[in-house]
Image (cartoon, rainbow, N blue to C red; front, side):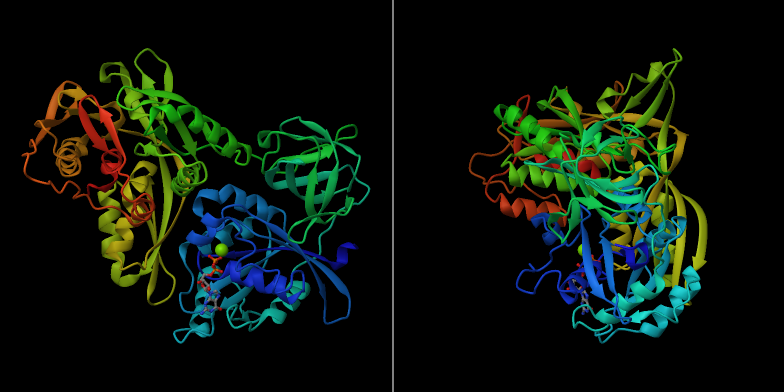
Length: 598
Ligand code: GDP
Ligand code: MG
């Protein structure tokens, strides 16, 4: 296809503003799939995604559209993952485009991830076409939302499309706007190949399939190609486009978007952000922006039934085939036995993997509280990275510790500014900026430890703002903090999986809260169970779980359980997860108790 008739675009939006629904409508309108062929949400094709209403794996689709001028256009829609955990993947997907539809809910207005996505789109020099969606809602106020977009983003909204994906209003206008406003790709068909990888997945017949945007040159079946960052070479066996299932068309020309496959067996050879070039006549330089994926959050995963260890290992290996961002290594816990330390991009990524392991592989797992990676500088001059609190060296060997900080952006109605500040300060956040988006809404930024974000920051923001707060964050830097390890002893024995790293000033309070929370969670048993919290050898709190009287059917579970846990519990009804730790039966909730004590 001639470049002037190609448009490459993404849809960016805050979660739930209607990105997937609009994508579905575009697919339907252009006849790429008939209504009957369309499942409820084609692009969100994993069950889990559908249930959670999020897009985890980006998917791409080529739409053929006859424009107002009568010419045929190739519109390549690149669907981006909609969650803050997947920021880097979003940025690479955007780098594959010339433009983006900015979808904003006509009732909700601009939210934290709207802005985060817009900034990323602007960094990639994309042309942005605003779409005000859900104009069918009684509470829709498109004029206010337009004004908000103009004020906060400085984007001209005179060409904004008013749409309702639900009622099918504005779909043709969206397609025409894509043709009219988004620039055609540029590039030289005969230059050495530069193709940007923006996603990949594993197919059991074809091996790893790379999603690519051809920036320079072209790809044909049989060519010998090379990954510039990983150095992996391969011969092209399949090359084509998504409709939305992969269709082999034998070539991808300059400016086009599609897939390439060929004897690639390991997703780690096919890294998002890497550049594919010719094996023999390589491009002088890779495309900019490549970086390896680095997990930000770690937790321990242990089988409830220790005989499931090998099954868990198999399952993790299988998951990793499709997820280069998942890392794991064997780990042993005195309390929990043999398991794995797993690294994730963020909390959502962690939840999704956990849930898939349980659902798809039928495993019952004990999960330990998530941890960030601490940089520990020792008195002997060495530095170690610690992602498991129980691995923290003794206090006497530590010179100082650095922890990761993020830049957190919160958007709330101005009535809630006080609440956001209070919570953020309590979370050791340092106030940075505050800006009014309009007369009612405020954007506040904080420099705040990632560790505190993991520990229920968003949940607290949500409940203090009646659900109005939206949050986005990105890694900022590492800074020195006064951190100590709080250990928990059950029946006199330390339980390594319950150790946590906390700020020195909060340690005593946290220790007391944790001990009393555990007292609620740990069921009564035939004997009394002392619970102690300690820093080093110093006990800072003590509680007792009293022995059960024979004739009483004790009501054991008092702990408040978050919504997603509840869902999980429901599915596994009647099968409580318990782990014998020494002589004490400890339920799963205990290992997550630290997250729920504020
Ligand atoms: P995404 O998270 O941005 O992909 O949002 P979805 O496309 O999954 O939509 C989120 C919710 O909004 C779903 O329940 C949709 O049915 C609903 N929705 C999407 N578009 C419209 C619309 O135009 N009007 C109304 N009333 N609801 C919509
Ligand atoms: Mg979606």
